[in-house]
Image: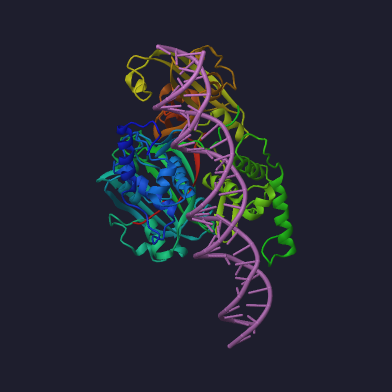
Length: 274
Length: 274
DNA sequence: TATTACCACTGGATATATCCAGTCATGTCA
DNA sequence: TGACATGACTGGATATATCCAGTGGTAATA
């Protein structure tokens, strides 16, 4: 309906956006929480371009009618979308689609494979190393493993549309993931996180990440088409499962131009004095 | 009181934690939202060590009694704390304090000054450049300014406990922040964001950030005590205010060892198929 | 003694209900 | 004509209420 003073044009646009959002509606049979379904529906509308750039979303109360859920559920979904940088809220006015939300999101805790597909890019990989060995303290300690414990190391060159973009090395407790080393890691769509989930029911839910930079090694430069001296963006992460046990340690070396990281931020109310 | 089977010891510990959290309670007179006050109270208890490492928090329903607010308000605060990496939730069990939540958080949208103080470090700065000039397109376009618009550029070497850690360069529309150039930017605790807020009532609420790496220039190497060839972590950000107008563009060059970025992550439910 | 059934408790999800402070078009009044 | 009051609408905050699926201790049972 829009505010009392709406012109016909504005009302029409509003209805159009409402239809765009409602597109793939939600279902009570779907095991996912309602707020996730709403989140997905709105995100799909944005990413498939059904909502115009800088478009205004239907109001929360309209969305309640469109989706047939309570306002709390709508707000939960909207809060996530704002937090992820897809939407922006303007109190008293409405929610607006944020433009220029592009680039490679920090894909930690998500698999490279997933992130690539979400960006409509074709993920690929080349196996560099896959073996089990007795790891040094720098590796075993962060994983809460006893000194000398056997560790499965998996090193891969990651490609996007056949272009090398990042070198990824993972360490996992060998005892916890038996048989993982026997898989065909040369396969283009073999995802470590998918295997962990499906074979071992291990799901990382939390991560501690450190971002920095360093010079490339000669081997890395060769793999990433860089000419030394050159810099790489490094991302080191330890992931934990729901029971707070370390799952894996990941070290990434990013090609600075081909695979920078982008990040959307929105304040949570923390910006205080001083 | 804790679960029916609690031992005396556990009950005592639980009561202790409850007392620790309740410490600086909340007030209806405080203009801040209740969930922010709860958030702050729990965060203070964690950071001041009143909650033991890996300590278990009182349950949501206990916190309802402790703070005298509804469960929704408690959950709102808890969700933020989980999202920020301070807490971890274990359904069926409770909330636990996350260990090893340290390092320099991504301080985008927050001032360097703030972040430093929050880490109990002494922030400092050395003015490198402060002038108004007609900026090239690479600067004016992201700020939605017409070509040839006058831009205020502020370049500073940032110090932590007198050690140079990052070079920060900011660009702002000169017309929007008249007089900003006349301030004494050599002062150690002069904060750009504080001045924006207090003098012009401008508050960035959203940011689009790109992280990458590159080689240091000679001048930067000199300022950061690096020896070329060396790499720096770069952080480029455009900040927007509540009305979606660009506020400033910031470019940071981080010393890779002295000022890496750390980031806590927790899944929001996005980790899906494939 | 080992196993199992029970049950209190936990976080998670959701509905319904107010109240508030902004925003903005409209229409009235000086 | 221009300033102003009105009122519909917005997101934000909060309270109270259920229901659910895990978790883990206790007590009954084999």
